[in-house]
Length: 457
Image 1 (cartoon, rainbow, N blue to C red):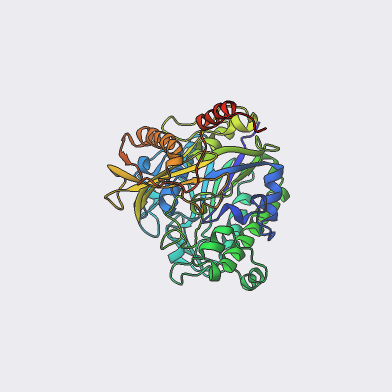
Image 2: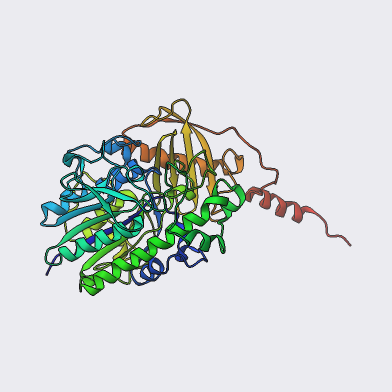
């Protein structure tokens, strides 16, 4: 039996709630939504670090940023890093990369900094080499290439050409878009002509942005326009695979490196462990994923490489920290982790852990922009069942001290396992709730008192 092809359709800075299957009512992502239902929708999908370079290093290696050494932007991925491309290449696959890389030291990216990809049509910092209608990348021989069309379409056309050229041999293709990331030099979200106006006329604003504002009041229309064009491009790629009779033997994953909080949590767009920065849309179709349904297991970018390698029937390298989620897709009762771990090592040094219900985060007590800290202070605690947009910070409330202590224990387990380090975590200053919370002993005492009181005649 022929090995399956594998494609990663990778967006940049896309919130999970831009998709219909996550509640967006604007109809921006009909292709994502349809295929998520037909295939496997990884409902609870998160980045391991909400920043371009570190998140991409995790996705390529199956390791956390402190393990890859790319703990902030501007650090190239080590030449000898074990990557998903190297694994597929060793197993007879042609490997190709198209779009934004952000794991090298310069443009054009030297061959030894390309993570083992054989075919290459990319730029290290696509946001600086190109613009919305000025797509400039470099080929495998470092030659500058200007591609026609809106940037999303230009890269999608290149991906379709790659698929057409590799119909007779198995391939692993990574297509990395800049959209819906902002264009750095203009601090704008340049949608295709006419799309922003279309979105502004019917914009739905998520509750966190409606309350906290940030830059969303003037950026959200362009952002949504970029998301819409990405979904259209995704549909075109799927149509191309279908027309080439390749769709049934191709695994396609749609995911993003991190999300976007529009300067509501700090003074830029990410680098925060809030859901608005760490939760991303992820779905997969193809062999092993059809009719997988909605999977609620907590999935991280460190799991991407192990999952795709396993899905292709290859051995996952022991050096990868992440896990393949394939056993859970085959049987939702299969054991899986109860929490996910986040790192931040740029703008601030922070750590967080998330369970299905709770989010708990800490921030360095002393250092900034360090791989890790010796001591952290508790910063936030959110009850996601009752506060999914994280508007009410419960940290320090004495009534939630037991919950915080459990999450602190979980966070220390992660730092010990991933970073070989157990920092000090200082408790937040106690805050006392204004409401009185009944304990079980209060109810027992009340029943005893009731029995002791004579009935009123």
